[in-house]
Amino acid sequence: QDELVESSTGGRFYYKPVTVDGLELKLEPCQPSIGTIVHGIDFAQPLSPTVVRFLRELWLERRALVFRDQGHITREQMVTMAEYFGEVGAPFGEREHVPNSPVDLNQQIKVPGIPDMLVLPSDEDVPNAAAAWHCDATWQPRPPMGSVLMCREAPPVGGDTLFCDCYGMWAGLSKKTKERV
Picture 1 (cartoon, rainbow, N blue to C red):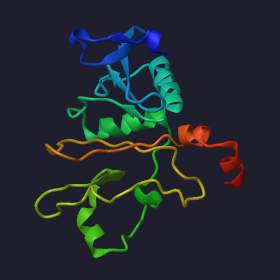
Picture 2: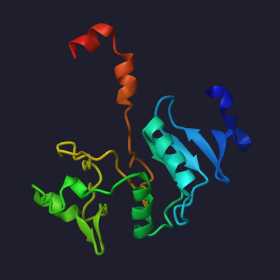
Picture 3: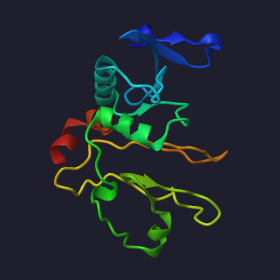
């Protein structure tokens, strides 16, 4: 697919230009098999069903989407954005989840009017709030298909969110290893 990728002014990043329902987007691949940064979306504005369908198909194909510069959206707009991709579930997979550690109690901030949002502040009082949390809830009878994350303020070093392409890993295994697994 490299022949479809263009260079930005100054070669800062490479992208595939697309127009969806009159909206001009730039799709910047993060890695060959996973992740795309989508430039040109503002989740403070409603999206057409055509754009939503395009983004959902892109997400299913690339498995991780990044939308930069969305720090201006409200929490309610973030919920609307998440609903574009499917039904919004509860943090930890349970509406009335009780943390099993006193440390976890310091990390939970309930948002009035938005019961399915979990806020993880990280500051001097709780310096490692985002270091070991997860929200996959894979033990549920109907596990979530994905997660929506927003970073309002990133540290100058670290703070990375990493993704792994398990489909790509499986495809790279030998036939013998696949049979053993």
